[in-house]
Amino acid sequence: LDVLVTEIVRSVRAVWPEVPIVVKPKVSVDRKRLTQLLAAIADPHLIVSDAPVALLAPRAICGITAGHTTGQFEFVAANDVPWIEHCRYSAFWSSLYPQKTYTTRYGGVWTETSDALIHALTDVRDGRAPEGAACLRRLSGFTDRTISCDDFLRV
Image 1 (cartoon, rainbow, N blue to C red):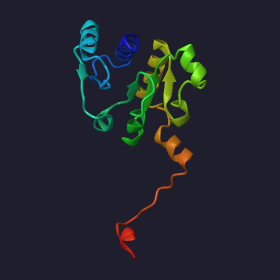
Image 2 (image 1 turned 45 degrees about the vertical axis):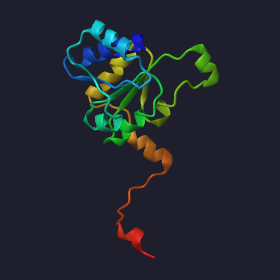
Image 3 (image 1 turned 180 degrees about the vertical axis):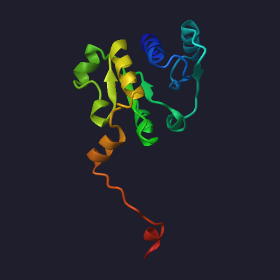
Image 4 (image 1 turned 180 degrees about the horizontal axis):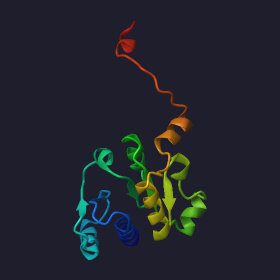
């Protein structure tokens, strides 16, 4: 995680030099170690938050995760904010789950290197974001409909 977080911060800085970066750690993350890592990165625009991803996502340019998390779908639900999963999976993980990630199937981007992450972030910046919510709507067969509360009150 130390390597991935450092790569994520550096890659974001390559595309957006001063935008605030909100780090939302899982509850299982060692806070002392995270504090030491962020101090070593020494970026004055890093913010650590315990706010739910559902509250952070609507204000985000994009979401970047360090591996699998259902939090990715919070970005899709928040006005189709693009998400990127940045992770390198081990041979053991790959033997258990050969496709390694579901991210690309559901409209996100998966990167394994800093260069690939910078490329994905540049796409987001330049309006070439992945399809996100459109992909989920298509896979689920979603159709937009106008409904009324009265529809649920009829006996």
